[in-house]
Amino acid sequence: MIKGIEHLGLMAKDPEKLAQWYEEVLDFRVIYKTASTPPAFFIAGQEKGVIEIIPWEEGISGAKDKKTHIAIEVDDFEGAVQRLKSAGVTVEEPLEIFAGGKVVFFRDIEDNVLHLVYRPKKIWA
Image 1 (tube, rainbow, N blue to C red):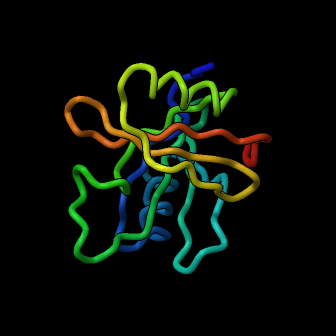
Image 2 (tube, helix red, strand yellow):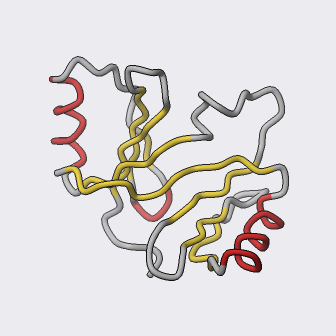
């Protein structure tokens, strides 16, 4: 049901420039760019690890906000949401995302933001 960490999310004042830095300095590669304005970028390491670089929004604190998060990949979205609820975790309303996916945000006992993410098909290799 719960497969593991799918990606980590970071905020950036210039997402494209930060993605380029990861490419040039750490040999990451852009694997997906959203159609939003400004776009978010998903970058990956040569063998594993995905980071989502999200446009910074003024007035949002970075550390405990939804923009900085751990995304947990699941293959049974409804079952995983029910598991959280059964464990007493408060979950927000599920949201539909690009490419037919779904997410639901929640917090751990230290108030860190996590979300379950379900993607019916991989949108990056």
